[in-house]
Length: 442
Image (cartoon, rainbow, N blue to C red; front, side, top):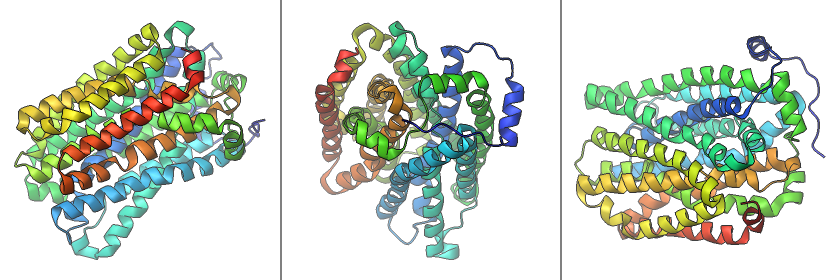
């Protein structure tokens, strides 16, 4: 049985949050959805600010000792460390959650995320401090990964439990809205700075501003989320829904099958996630003469298409079933993987088509990926199981995608990146086939 949360003194942030929301009124799914969107948008904004800098800044600033391709590959290797650190962070912060409560855990995690992010803005270059610059970047990136694991607040699972039976697909897509929104804002900010500043000024100081913005957004998100998770109404909902943190050992022992299936079921969408966000930016930056800001504009437009597709996934999942939608989407991603490399290598028109189709497919599949994670688990292990499964899905599906895709493309041509994406689609189809529980509940 999951351990109950002991009574401990609340933090000043929790106290302020309770004061703002001490009405003792009923809460509904729509209010939970607002908290989920705010939280996920802040996380994804941080994510994309770092991802874009991994292509446009770090290869030159931190890995200046290497050629541009090698520098970008090294930058992507550091980028992947956050995904490796996330399962470790989940273990650490679940222990904090069990001992001190969800509010304390969330406060520590978001402060660590904010500090790790804003500290990156003060990063010195390799030309200034040598290998110490690389070490500092690694430490900050691992700090981000640990913190991202701790930001799991259970609101997505609570939303799934409180959603009407006829609208489970609709409410499952709500957490995923944060991804395209975060990408649009981050890309727009970098596009403006790269347009407004000279290359020297951008690499010298301009790129640092988005990291300051990320820190400010984290502070706002912290209070917005605490306002929800620490109130008596939500505490009761968490407890009545058995959304209390069980130990990793308990969860893995009793629900290991669902963890494995849940980690691989969304693999197609998670692999596609980086194949239309980080990887194409690196390819265009390294192998074409196109101005990065122009491609970021294309990415913004495509992300708007993805945002609409995420919303559409909610309607479709409720109409035809979540499992069917994920299966059709994975099959479509498999087909896309065959001709996608040809589009990406066909100039600006091809890039635009690649991005629009890619984001449309991503929205339809990614829009229901959180639903796959939440639907697999019994209530007793849903909180911990969902957090761990999300970590593993990101690690296997997305963590190394930019590195692997760029490495393959640079050695074997763009067609090899399509093969990588195809493998993710196949894994998803196999996982969905095996997931009989999901089939029975849709």
